[in-house]
Length: 239
Ligand SMILES: Nc1ncnc2c1ncn2[C@@H]1O[C@H](COP(=O)(O)OP(=O)(O)OP(=O)(O)O)[C@@H](O)[C@H]1O
Image (cartoon, rainbow, N blue to C red; front, side, top):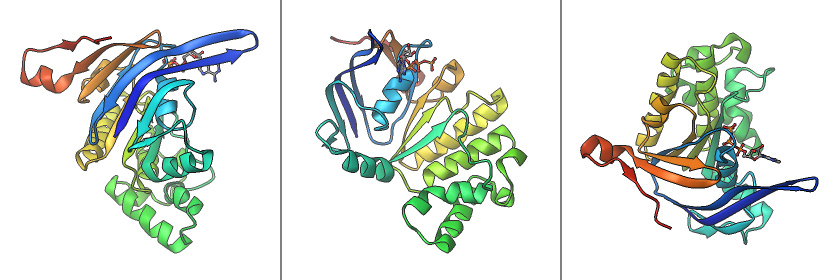
């Protein structure tokens, strides 16, 4: 589903060049639940933005769903982004003057789906997230966990194959974090690939694999399924 080969990314500010990703090699299988960890500034969000086609890599090969990204036009990349990917953010990014149903329906507005159909679908997705009664409430009337579930419903309404979540539990207390993770796990069990950036060990250990980034390279990969099934712990990176 996703193959990264020797991905590099630098940011240039004024006369300074900051080399953030220094050769990332990674293969993510369809249906995987994966987390990316690493200290602040290690390049987690940069990597997620590249995976989500929100930013370009400078060098290396990125193949998404059998298509190489670098040689792709911006229009094609936007189409792929809209059809294949769903995004969830730490700060929920809900529109404050639209109710929960309208927030969930928004991606379908851009796909020119009729108001009646998009509201019907939004209600279905809110129902799946256990939020049907909250459909007509404004974001400021919802708890953090409810807001994140609305944001997840919004990410799911276009039926993406991959969900990219940047610190989805970063603004939530621990009980609510587990609830949101359980929801993302359920989504993953329906066959959707889920990639989560997190600072929290507990959250990362709920995923299949943990990618540890350090200074722009993958320092180690932890296979949680192997840990659960066997004695194996860390898989060293082979250069
Ligand atoms: N658009 C940009 N322009 C210039 N520098 C940037 C830009 N985006 C990120 N950086 C820098 O790149 C480095 C990596 O940033 P990134 O956000 O990927 O790290 P991170 O691991 O996600 O950090 P955090 O955990 O704090 O969110 C940081 O030093 C950051 O300041």
